[in-house]
Amino acid sequence: MTTPFKIGTLISGGGTNLQAIIDACRDGRIPAKIMFTGSDTPGVRGLDRAEQAGIATFVVDYQQIITACRDNGIAPDDLPDDFNLAEVTDKQKLMDPADDRTPFFLQSRAMAEKKLLARILPYDIDLLVLAGFMRVLTPYFIDRINTVPGQHRIMNIHPALLPAFPGTDGYGDTFRYGCKIGGCTVHFIDYGEDTGPIIGQKAFEIEDTDTLEDVKRKGLEKEWELYPECIKKFIRGA
Image 1 (spheres, rainbow, N blue to C red):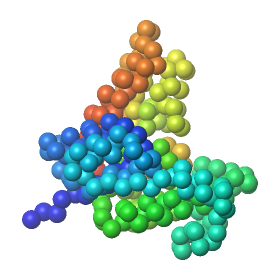
Image 2 (cartoon, helix red, strand yellow):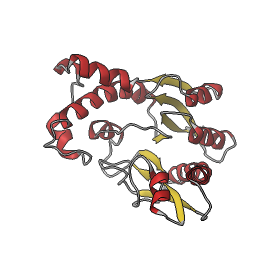
Image 3 (cartoon, rainbow, N blue to C red):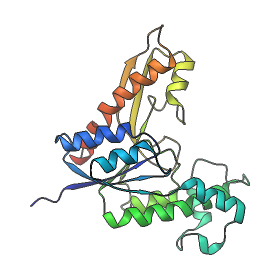
């Protein structure tokens, strides 16, 4: 019997992309099984979607962890045993290493990532899919999922046609710039901000009368098509 391809998913909100992936697995467009859905935020709609589909769920409350770090400080014992601040700082491409805030950012995230990895690694997944997960992943986490050099196993969707408009507000940036073509991108995660290898893209026209909400609606409709296609492409080894 063929072992099913195993996917893990992480979310932060409503989970509409998660739902598109659930539906694609259910109807056979993606030959895979979703092993879990994790969230950095308790009580979000995406967790309900997963539970309704019979998928195991968990929460690692990032905000609670970060607040505790600010209030109580970070002790060496709080960090993962194999965390090396100098190594992670050197690898990451998001923050200025000379910025006084960088050590706190990387250490507090590593504390959250330690909890994430404790929930994820026992599933022995083939691919981790960020389906609207709004937290930066540090090299500490990435290196413990991408265990084979040169082989990416973390996939993300971005609301713009990368490399244009990286960051958290791709559709808003596209709209405010006055673009007549918008789109979305599925890419692999690397150590930078939306800089990993591109897997697939879909575009749509922006009419003169379109509002920002129109752009977001068109973009989401393309996302729901694109993400399952890219996961299927990954499974086929493209």
